[in-house]
Image (tube, rainbow, N blue to C red):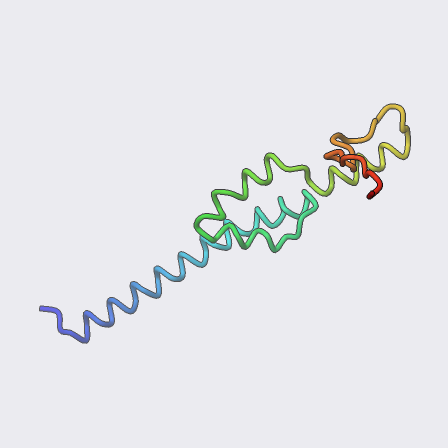
Length: 105
């Protein structure tokens, strides 16, 4: 029969092993995303959001469907080299259009 002290020791060891493997799992998740965020032009610290339960579902969609900072820089450099080949991005900067201002009576 297992005494209370033996059960407590086994429980403590199991908790330690669980925390150890969770830390290894978190590192294995954060490191690749750190590189991905850095290559995309974002801060690598955004990869820490991958260990937050709801954010780890949303962030891949943000990466997939947003324009990366590195893409913005590339488009700007391409436009400087040949402005006719790379027209400005739409919608233009003054979007949405503002109504004309009429003089006050």
